[in-house]
Length: 466
Image 1 (cartoon, rainbow, N blue to C red):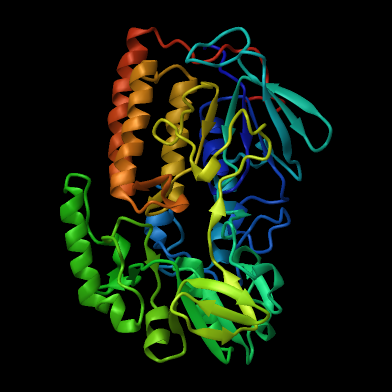
Image 2 (tube, rainbow, N blue to C red):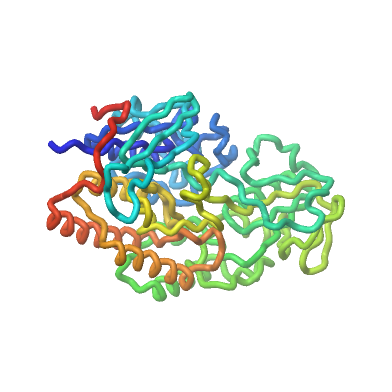
């Protein structure tokens, strides 16, 4: 059996454990480094690594069957939309079921990942390929390949350049990332402004509405608020297929949502300036009811702050005690030098959201935002990467690869609302079907080339293959 590349996996959240499991089953020598003392990433409430945005009442907004790994179903005792504690428990069970917990080094963060000089560029494997990985223990290790699975919901993105007077706001100003939902006094008998129309904004506005004097939900743009259930079953389990044209799928989905909840304007929300599916969906069974009952009041975007006064774009003002910015996250790689790999404006062009166009020895797992759940796609990407690292899948020629990336970016600009949130958006079924086609083509290329490895094997991971 040919010697396989050694691999470093950064992170043991939902995507990192999918990568580690695939590498373990395929016999790779690898190390997986996790800054926390447990797996699960953002799904671990108050994760010791400080990067989880989970709050006490958090439940998944994609259904159990949509989120689970195909080869390890969630317990049927779980509800259709499990609590975060169920998900953390599930990820722990996944690691133990497949037997690779000892392959993860806990309490250890990657502080720096640096390529060997000149290695891995322009699609050629040279004697200089590979990575030097520095750890917060002071140790440095060498690897032939790097799998990045550090997540993209941990580095809060605040409004830029910010609103006039924002720095002098006299009340509590916080990002949704820091909300834990354990202190009812935060909202009790107070006037609360929540900025955003995503899932966190809806959840926090609903929670605040049961304690606050008044809650205002400020929208920078309109959004489709989608119910979790339609026709007595989770909406994301209704039949769909990549064979159905996107435009037709969109019309059918819009018809279903309108039949279920009516128009957004009925609830005082702005009319969406896009079709359903052109932005990441906002899923809530509760916020429309709270709006309809007057417990939450819809407002346009913020304009400015003055003391405790918050002014909205329609000229109205409120004296607010708490303002929560639900304004998303930045894609960050603190272990890379910015000039090496960065994602300004959350843009990191990749081939099929996995392969870097310049460095062919670094790969990304879970760096995508599907209309659906990330976890099954991370498992799909991990299996694909194992094929590639074993020489059983070859990338297309450089010009074709770059043309594919450019084509995807053009299609994304047409398909989705322009925003940092949609720089890595994919349709679940379309992505799965596209990867399947590309894997078949890449397998044929590998067979013609004699299954050559994509990198030169020079290093041995500390955790050798089991």
